[in-house]
Length: 167
Image (cartoon, rainbow, N blue to C red):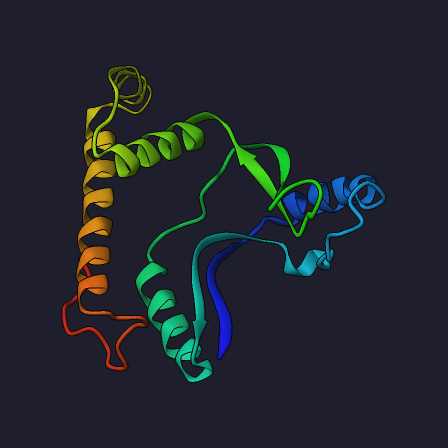
């Protein structure tokens, strides 16, 4: 078994800025096992412990399905640690701007199954109706897939290739 996650590589200048911040943080946070800059990444989804033989098929499927998407920009600001300052193990970088708004909208919808009027209005004003509709569709699709996978106790991707073509 191997601990796996889906991640995005960072731009070299971003890696450099994080490395510079770590130089200042290292003496203040002795409990963290610091990774070399070559291992810095943005985690999109933690997969948990999976059979090592499944890593390559999952990676190939993700590469094939995500290949059409170009690079994207994320606005980040602020640092924190998991689980807490007394036992820091993971350093995280916070989101700002549209990324933070999208995250807040998504978390509110997932936690309460509704979105408050202020959150809705802020997202609508900032993103527009079409992107907001797309976001809600993506969240709904994620929930649908999650429920189906949990109901059938699916823990990893199937061995065979998908039979439906990508749009």
